[in-house]
Image 1 (cartoon, rainbow, N blue to C red):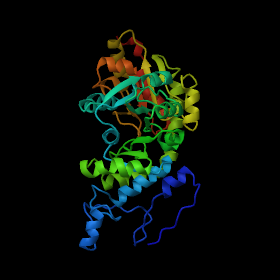
Image 2 (cartoon, helix red, strand yellow):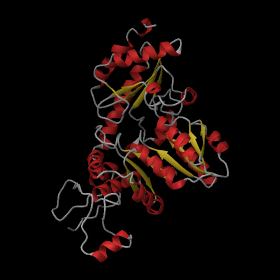
Image 3 (cartoon, rainbow, N blue to C red):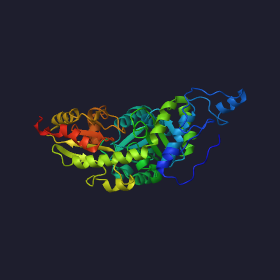
Image 4 (cartoon, one colour):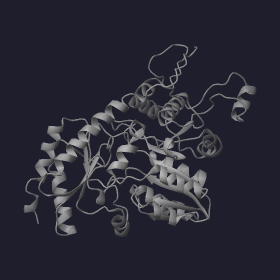
Amino acid sequence: MTQRKLPDGLHLDTLAVRAAIDRSQYGENSEALYLTSSFVQPDAATAARRFAMEEEGYTYTRVGNPTVTSMELRLAALEGTEAAVATSSGMAAILLLGMGLLRAGDHVVCSQSVFGSTIRLFSGEFAKFGVETTYVSQTDVAAWSAAVRPNTKLLFAETPTNPLTDVCDIQALADVAHAAGALLAVDNCFCTPALQQPKRLGADFVIHSGTKYLDGQGRVMAGAICCDQKYVNEVFLPITRTAGMVLSPFNAWVVLKGMETLGVRMRAQCDNALALATWLQEQPGVARVYYPGLASHPQHALAMRQQSGMGGAVVSFDVEAADPVQARTRAFHAIDSTRVCSITTNLGDTKTTICHPATTSHGRLTEVQRQAAGVGQGLVRVAVGLENIEDLKADLARGLTGLKALQ
């Protein structure tokens, strides 16, 4: 059926609901879910042209699927990029990025504060194939610039970081990368395009774990790279067609439906997070609170400019302790005393989650790597959901009360 073209200049909330709806002949209002592994061709000659990529048309879901295409187009519209390629998870997106852009002998500059699995991917898997990575302070632009070499091909950052919410200056890092003839990739998992659009600040690639806020309800795994169309066509699609780290149609459909409420969810969760972070600052037993929305955060002013005036939905805090052993005991007590929060490492859910990063999300790192990332034994991360804020305060208060009595 004929599709009505959307007008230009629509707000992000409208695009999240309306972008990339390709209705079938039946005129469905909700996006169709195409659960099929292959597509029937009208004749052998058309099949030959489509498999040779000489003619548009779907052939096999590992190569392309209408539901996945809708998810990619909608996410690209929200991020302000020409295109996007969906993957089976956020880590698969970073793997695809490296496979497409890096070769033996290349060099990467990466924030030392990124997600633990990202560090392991660069230092472990990519290193096997001759790619060297230098880790630098997330917030020190001079350190990024000093680390660049003639063979540097990629700068990689996530902002805010997991779990300490350090914020990097995307525009400044883009300038460093481009001056050296390199490219900048930014993991936008914590903010999503509802708060931050790295491409508009100079980033070349925007990475997503759709498992988090894009889905928003902890239902499926998904990932994506948002970028210029030429990179999708010439660099990434040839790999996904062969290697198969593609997103399933069902998961793409779930993320499509999740994106419809992205803006309203993020605003509500950011409000809850700010209220919780402000409250945590006043609680006995809490040594420090990490949240970009607080004026005490070192990059507060930058975050407010770069993140549409909101701090995100992740709050971390250190418990007061005399040594690492006591810190871990007290952190575990604070976590185990909760009754409303879910003890799980996932984030981006409507349900508030709580975890101990040093033994979960960053548990596979060496102690040296954890220390460099600032992840101590007393650190607790809370990914704030949509529950009533007073219930969340009361839930955390159960564990914070009496912490000093623990040895």
